[in-house]
Length: 397
Image (tube, rainbow, N blue to C red; front, side, top):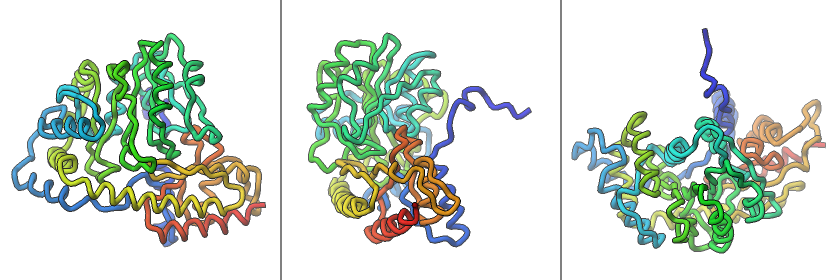
């Protein structure tokens, strides 16, 4: 009797991980694949952070931590929010989890009831709608087109809100588009939300430091809505610590208590050694963050220039994160022999199997006319990947 739960059967598998797996299969067969599908920095974790982890092992940080994280790490996060963002939080308003992914899921599971609606602007990160479904909620997708720089308008937000709306998930800087909401744009959305007191804002700010427009803007910076904002952040992207699995929420205390109760039952506190490494990341020199940001900006300029040289691509310059999300629908309906490109998933698979470049189709992100490339790789890889893509799409007639 192989009957999985209805809950699990409602979920879709991760498209980004699926592309990564197909890419690995080709590599195992000896194919030289350039992987632009993975959303993680290619840098190593900075040495001073690794040293803190080694010291933590020697100091026997090998026991269970408190469920919401060690007090020292929570204090470091409080100081980071104050110093970098001008935001006042108490340690009781912070909860650390096994990556920002768990932080998002915790929040959704803590506030969403069956039938509650969650507004998710598209393009969206692949897991948001699936997490809402896991909580028996209803994802309400609001499309933000390439013409509007992939950002929803206040009018679109107002039109999407119903009496059942419980949350809005806002990711800025965005995965998969690299779009960044300005303080003025956030304020316009905030003014809409003030009229709807039941709506919680889940503000995913994991790409905060990979930003090419100067300062980061947070929805929590508006005092009249801060008590309805849950900030999601962590060390994965800014400090090249994806595998360490440390994320956090900064939120109203009642939400933190709810997430603490939930996390206490199904994972408890995150890895003890990783927490000490994350503490060092937040309290140590931030020079490494800026060095990596500059490298990403250089790569962004490179990939944008090369992508604009490929016929049929419509390209918007990203303002943050490390993704390019070109429109590729020009190629839909075109053929290479008996192979037809019907959609962006076909297009991405064609680039992988024929051009040996791994990307991700936009269908997975709720934007079927586009596809995602990660430029968190070397300049050499970017140049060669874009050469391969240009040569490969030239075969489509």
